[in-house]
Structure formats: C-alpha cells, structure tokens
Length: 71
Image (tube, rainbow, N blue to C red; front, side):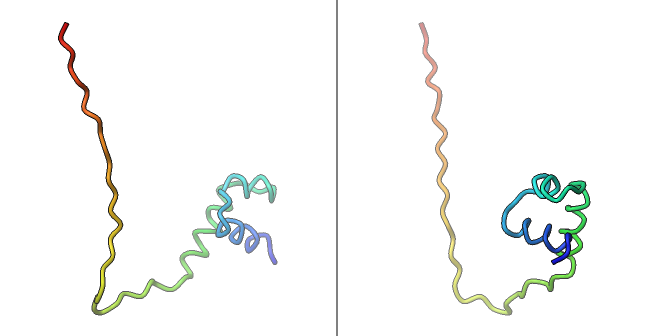
C-alpha cells in the first residue's frame, strides 16, 4: 500500500487530515489533495427515477423564553 493509499484509507476510517499528516510525516495539505483526487475518481451517486417512500427524521429544538422580571 502506497503512502497516498494509506492516507486515504485513514481518512475514510475517520481520522482527520492533520492527524494523518503527523502520523505519515507529510504536509496536511498533501493529504487533503490526495483525498480530494481520490474522491474525484469515484462514480456519481445513483439518482432514482421515481421515489416510492420518503422517510424523515424529525428534529425538535427548544429555545427557552427568558422571563422579563420587573422589580
């Protein structure tokens, strides 16, 4: 496995660019360029012609109102 392949594999496994660069003793921008070049070679994600079912995850947020106290 080449250094570039190793860097890309570590990135895919979840390691961040700077940590990979430190581990492999290269510049972090080189790692970013290698990952970007590898991503450019991937095929496009398939787009379905029709959609039968759509699922949504609902995210609820709560913002507490400040009560204004009058003294």
